Image 1 (tube, rainbow, N blue to C red):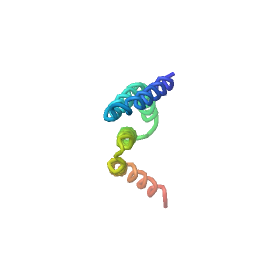
Image 2: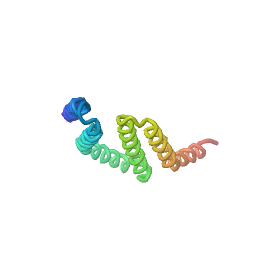
Image 3: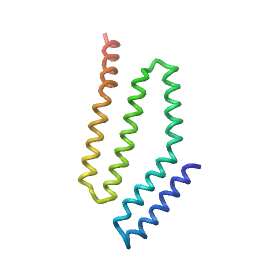
Image 4: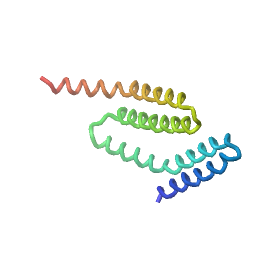
Length: 128
């Protein structure tokens, strides 16, 4: 039950942050970073399994492996961007959080252009 571990880390971190905020508010960011790192460690096995499943499915079909790799990278960028945005917002830096969010979106769109162009080429071939 990995979800119980994740929820446990989250709740324990929340309690520690509430207590530490009263005495040393500058340490709350470190507790939050540590909790995020622990949660990422807990889910790494699941992510590896998902990537293996997608790779085996792509090998069985006619999906280009480079597109699959690109989709995995895009998903990773989305997760990391959301993590960074959450940390910025937790620190009270909403302006920086908005810039990081916008940067992540721009990178995702720029990385997805080969997939979009391939899709459009396929549609053009199908249409008379």
